[in-house]
Length: 262
Image (cartoon, rainbow, N blue to C red):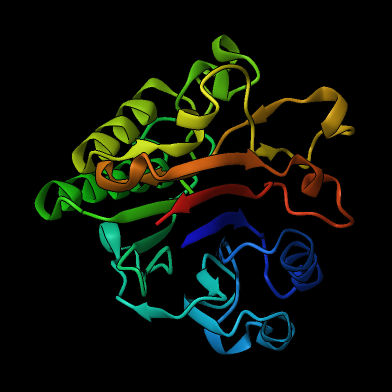
């Protein structure tokens, strides 16, 4: 039976619970993975989500920062989390659907403003986080899995509004792109979004700093949907709900969708 999955950096699930409910009502994904929830798990406003049929949740949270959650109409089993780079942050959680598919929800560190680990601790943490993800996938070699989330890297030239101008900007520097590529290769992950939409500029994030984000369109594709090779061919109908970036008091990210016939 097919299921549709969405991933969205919500930038505070409590502040934007109405937007989550709007998405669940209008788009009805079977599974919604949220990042940057900025809430302890017991403070996530579940009542409205449950009223819409999302009765299953697996989450990790902390007060004011980070936080990842998987909301589902379908039964899911909590299969744990990992503290990559020993940061003590709520940045990963995994759940398994009844069809055996494991969904990994990630919020990779943003990395600060200076792309130099010698002067920027956050950039070093980002690279270390990706290295530990890579090593884990080398050892585990995941199967029948989907990986989604805000990976905070736009890997391709057409994943940013201006490749040359972005080469020294955190999220598109060569060292980050290389690190993400090594992580992807370690698990054999297939970029489902780009499998479905292989050509052209594609963004999921637009800065709050832009006076008119839509007209300026200086975006980056930071949010991703990957799948292991054994199920990648089942993934289709990828899209980014750009309109959500224009909702009232929005997140600076837009939701990314994919459907899997499994």
